[in-house]
Length: 172
Length: 382
Image (cartoon, rainbow over all chains, first blue to last red):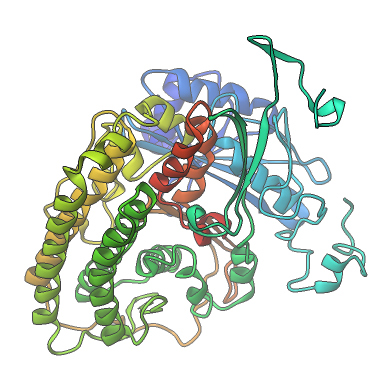
């Protein structure tokens, strides 16, 4: 019975991560094809450093960074990691409290995080603390809008032209 | 005395001469940038000392648009990401929707999808071979060789799907319609002409001394650095790591097909070229096997509702696009529209590493290094 409870709490690769990083704090669940590990911004760096440096895990490839607007629940960042050595994959979710979208940067661990984080920052207004070059990437350099927020209207040219206030009800 | 204002003359004393670094803007409208890509290079004589890439000139807000349209309507935008291989993009998008909704795909449709995706891959790789040959200096010939084969493939796409570049042929749950009656003989003819094209390129470039001297040993990338940058696809395989999503995490029917993963040794530009040339041959093998194994039956799941609604779902689909790992993160929270669809495009991550490859090289080589990345700006800029 205890075995079943453990698999429920730590499905798949989460059990392995818990075994090698017993101090890491996370809640595990499943998506359609990945194991999801939920942690908070304060514990992210510790967890990712462990994922990358432990030879039994060796998550050396950051394949994707996703920004998400969960509306009332605040913004969220999802990272997808892959381990070439062991063919493991995991998704790490980092929810941020509403009004405080700060997440530490991973650029010192993964060079490829640079552009991914800049994209998430400009599209959602997330702030990646410690990012070496936090400029707009896809949008114009001086454009201060976050178009992928749910509150941002689709195809509102007046905002781009500076005639209307950007994203009603959201502070920039 | 200097012709420049005083603040522009850097206090660099070299052999008693005052020298100044020069800034050169390349793009966004420049034939060598393969699209609307812009980079600002700082050069010290012939050597590049800094490179600042600028992207976003082709940003169309793909992800926001996808959130605004029905699952089936939004698909048309996705083959405009990697527009050289639209079918590969459609496949990833459809797989994401199918995964969240739990839709089954008929076996015949799976084989048709793989066959069309591999033909798209050949198409895209030929584009690279032609354009890269032109970058390096075989001006017209390689382009014409590539276009001859691409034209045949596009003709076939037109016959199957009704469109050449943006076929919008796949549907969540299968493909739009069955293959035409004379398909098998058409494809076999296509394969033999593609293989002739591979031989032509091999004869034109692989042993060509000018080409080899120009490319060998240029901008070598180690496997560790490539992984750290998130580089995938032919550039990663050129460093010697035989990693391909089709083998590492097989999807569709790739696990039933027999093909090899070509790799290089040094990760230099010549290896990147050669890996792509070898991959074209492997793709022709996959297409042949698809023809042999393809069962009869339906090509579209008949039990689909008129409006696709997904209550809850989350997945990260990864496929081997033509340039590397083409991933789609999808989330559904009810309704007939996706809550979030994020594209992880291979060109985006590969291009991010450009600075590391270009700094320290000669200015003339910077253009070839950019060409060897084989970027598609539709995919970089979303």
